[in-house]
Amino acid sequence: MSRPRWITRRSATVLVCLALAGGAVLAPQAGAAPAGIDSYYAQTGWATLHGDAGNRKTVPVSPSDQYQSTWSGLENASVLTAPVVGPDGTTYVTTGLAPGQSNLYAYAPDGKLKWKSAEWQNSDDFDSCAVLQSPLVARNGDLYVSDCNQLWSFHPNGQVKWKVALPDASPGSPWQEGTRATPFRPLVTAQFLSDGSVMGITTWNKVVVVDPETGALRAPVTQLPATASSPADQPKPPTLLGSGLLDPELAIPTWELFWGGTMPQANTPSVSNKTGRIFAVSSDTTQGYVYGIDYVPGTSGSLGTIALAFSAAVGSGSSSSPTISADGNAVYVTDNAGILYAAGTDDGSVRCSVDADSKGGSPTAGPDGNIYLLGDQGTSMTSYNSQCQQRWSADFSALAKEVLPISPTVGEPTWIVGGPPTLTNDGLLAPISVGYHVPLGPNAAPFVATDFRLVKIDPATGSIEKVLAPQSGESDGFTVPNTLNRLIVVSYGAIGTSSVEPARAAIDPRLPEGHKMPPLRGGIEAFLPVDSPDGGSSGSSGSSSSADLGSLFGS
Image (cartoon, rainbow, N blue to C red; front, side):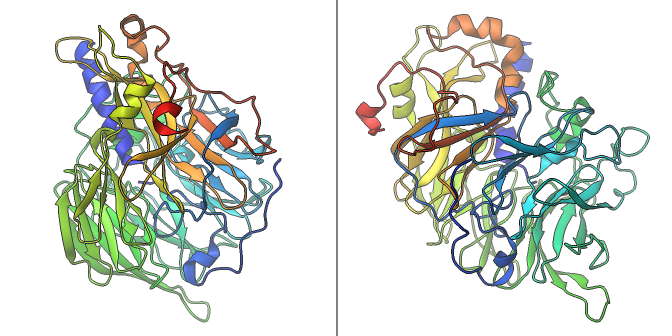
């Protein structure tokens, strides 16, 4: 999906165990517009879910050595995808709140709420499915984002530019009219095409291409071959994203989408800036597929065409969002068994593959051909070269032991990586949660995070170079720097904390003094360098640490 799939892998293990127990000054947009499809995106470094058309999660910035929280928002709402940045530095965030609330928010660089979408009540309004994707931001600042059954465009001031209906789901699909207030057939995050058209693929595998100015179709709606997937093999826990964090009617579809279950399409497509070819990953009940899709614009008022260039089989499941290599010659994807594949963008042939233990994790791709992956449940981070050979496997145990003590009741502290790494000019940015495995029964010892750090990692070795800042919550999503100002914005989905919330009374007494379960919170948090004249001190400072991080990591 647009989803960070690794989230669910990590969170699901927690849930199964629990069930067993019971106004800154902005710089102008940099330089001239790049050539090709990239030129249609806001030139901010992060204009769509994975940053760019290739889903690379790479931003040409050089982070400072130390940051402080400067503002936060939407603490009562789960944010499951990436905040994106408009050409004036505005941060846009989607949520999945229930009727009577808004689900698209615009924040100025100083954290002031500029506007929010209208509160929704019915299927004609902008509804809770917005949480399943990030807005696509155009160079002129216009936004393109779907809800459950419509594709919307907003001007930068929040005025609705247009909205159009999305195609019906495949026959027999669940969560349609008669079973929900709003039928479920959203796009998974949109991208631009070679002529500036807006393209997306619905959860039921239908390719939609529209005019960015009017919303009118620029090609016939096209059904990709896979039409249904097997349901998720894990039941949805009853407390997942409760307490108002997510529209209750959306809970089961969201769970299925994050697991790649039921619906065949649960990923963000990527588009080659080199050739204009679209890449998508889908699943049926037995097999996963990487699709190469060609769009040819229409002429003289006629509709364009969409054609399937290739269909390459990979392992079962809906896999990850496809990431295109920097040279445009390979597309990387992982399947639900954790296998990493590098497929040729010309014909889909698998050039190499390796068991990377990355179940549904979308790769980060660097300009040197190297890629970076999260492992299953966020318990590892690895790097591979373009021949699928492992370069390193990171171990952040030293950070866990520097932050937390060894406990006589729950043992040594451990860690997980809370989101896919973002590659900058001089390092990888990633959120790391540290905590303990807390026994809750003979077969249950879920990971309970107590402290959180934003770190910079050496891309050559996988070792931590700097601890940039404490975070106030457990990140379940993307770390978003941008090229316009010095802000770094992170998202909090509250997946892990909401999963173990019912066991808080049993967990807290077993944790070391001063290190308890964090409060249940979602939303976003923004950070500025400590030496920034615009840096504030009113934001959350994160959980307290029992050790001096500077002694080991120089933060």
